[in-house]
Image 1: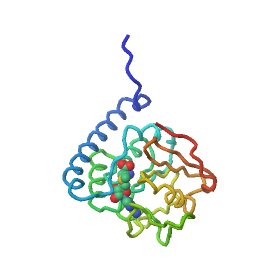
Image 2: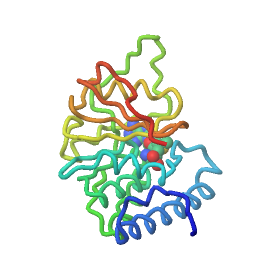
Image 3: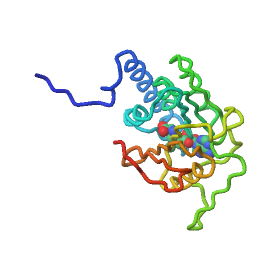
Image 4: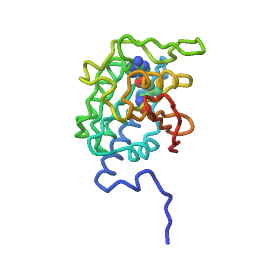
Length: 211
Ligand SMILES: C[S@@+](CC[C@H](N)C(=O)[O-])C[C@H]1O[C@@H](n2cnc3c(N)ncnc32)[C@H](O)[C@@H]1O
């Protein structure tokens, strides 16, 4: 008998698996081009998550009617994956040309995922950490994109971000300040995808690390 290694796709039915695989393959092709044409010449904050590693996290949290928001959605792959999995999915990205790429991908993959150019930081927010270093890392400045999305941060059930090292506390603070008390925050990182939840995120505890 042949035993094959389990994969993230094992719990996904055939038609959906094919759609996700095609999307992810195109996502890696776009990334390779972006890396050689843009990122090798000038530093850029877009580095993609391991899309296959995101799949179990998205599967674990999906439920009918659940809303999903990606902070810094870049080429939109994770947001489109969420839409294909049944979330009402939205992405916000500061770099407008990347938003155009995401919208084109959504159209080609028959996804209703919606994208807005601008910042995922709500207007008027000021990051004030207890340790005093209030630099936001690679989290850039721009007009808040929530008005263009037509939803405030409080409307989202699942919020996902891929912070650079040191940016996690600001993302957690954004959820504490503006997030829905029942929302989940997914943060991608070197050890896997961390899931945070809690009453208004006051006791923000990693309740699982999805590898
Ligand atoms: C590390 S990449 C993650 C890309 C994607 N979320 C993923 O997981 O594959 C971070 C992205 O956030 C974007 N970004 C940085 N600051 C932002 C802000 N304030 N509002 C919206 N997007 C931002 C960057 O342009 C970049 O595309």
